[in-house]
Image (cartoon, rainbow, N blue to C red; front, side):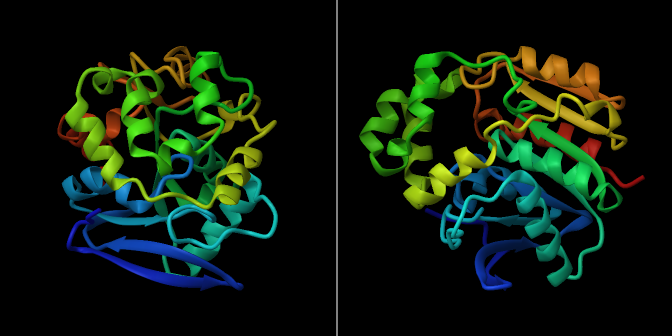
Length: 267
């Protein structure tokens, strides 16, 4: 597992909770990134390496090398924890980017700390439990973290779970598997519990920030219809459909970075 050389990793203590945080110095408004369920900073390496922006990213509690919490954190608690992290880093305002599960936390942060959020990018995510669900067989695979611990299992099931190029590109699947840092099993299930019953459907129309929504055309986890619904509800939203699956941000990085970079250009 490798990380960009200019991404500085440190452990930060927030009121007794240790978080593994990555900071990459760069241009523009800081970009705060929320990863997918169980994901560590390593999984974002292709995307982080292509961006010249100032980036803040961290392992969620119980993922990567961050400490697991005593009880599950709800999205509002994760948003508050993130705000405390920004305070400790002396960062006042950010752009936010959330991937899949992290997209839920990104939406919550944007709502809860609207004055600290300039723009939002949502990738392969939904409005929570009111989403149009993915295939039941795929969601069963997502219900446990086996793919993080068993590389052979991941490579056998990657196409079915994530769709897109991972259906046929065994090299990409193997590369992704090598970057996977197993989460705490307790932390993984806490992340599932965190978003149980959560939805943004009833308040997305109040989001004032310009929002870029990216969705995979072949996403078995979050069907593309969810992106269309979110785009219709958020007043200032732009939708980009990507000809790939759930992990398009990592498999189509070079194609998507210019779009995201233009969207995040300073006002």
